[in-house]
Length: 457
Image 1 (tube, helix red, strand yellow):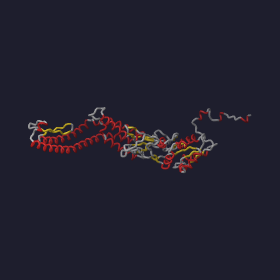
Image 2: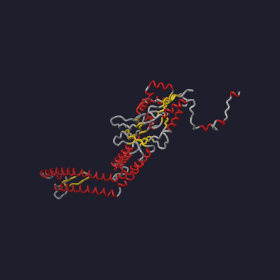
Image 3: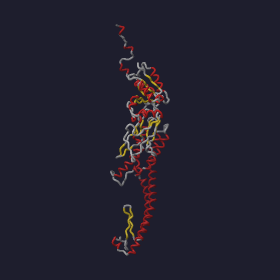
Image 4: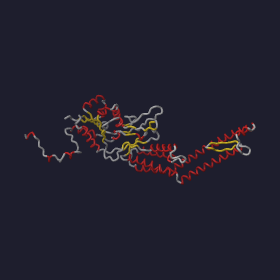
């Protein structure tokens, strides 16, 4: 009987209870060849050496590969953040920006602080005594020119027995009598025909003179408005520059997309200075009036264009990412674009762009099951195209990203800038699925060159 019983000394096991074994690395018992193949594929820094893991359910294929992916990711650097920015020249094509890990969050928070500070500081600066005094001086210059020109027009009208007034921005003239009193319509009709003909000629001459007066004043009004706008820009520009320069100073590390960021910040500065009037409340309107509500909506829209959409945030990471996508769809894998409904119009902008698993796994690894990918119609062909070019384009309507608008009145579809993605894909399937895929798509073998074969026993 003693030969049929195996007795093990507990002291020889190296642990007191099995609770101490939790969190320990899983052993590749009997899978030495699969282990070597996994390490080869995960550590090879060459394109098209993605891993195809062959094994039956229960062989440890998913658990062991996740462990190996984390070990390989620990040897890789932390990838950059990914942001999407409004494109001021082509709003339907948001710009992609990569920043060192952590600086995407810094840029997003910094732009939010700039927007809040400007909303508080610009009205104060425009209400300062220095600005009001200079604006009043420009207004007085124009008023003096306008008054002198109107005085000449008024003399012209009086010489032809017309009284000229301005009511609600309109020129109104009335015929006067010998003593300067306004004539009624009945009195005017009672005048002799010769006098009425003279009045008609005088009225035509006055109308022509009023036209010349308006033609003279329009350029002067434009010059006044341009001078006031230039004064506003000159007054507010230091505030805007101070806020954006603080951002530039905080992001002075070596940035691959530094030129792109500088160009975007310059466009932000120009847009803010071109719309300074939106920061100033309408003094002649009630706070709850429609005009004031429209101004606030326009200001919100301007500040939204200056927001930073941080779609991949790698702040706090110490290694490359490892993503396990258990529910792969076009939306979850490639990203999507959320839509907002404004009345009956479907609208989308750069703030609605969402990253998928492939973008989040940039610089690291992603684990997929072939059965899940094949179950989603059209997903494998799109994944194959991505593997061929290595660039990812987030598309509207992918996987139900939002309602689509069609017709001549529909807004232009959003086309975010494509980005290069470096990711190692680990695809898990059975032996039958592997060879069925090779037969159906011979190009798959060219992309998944690292074969990790788990033995059955």
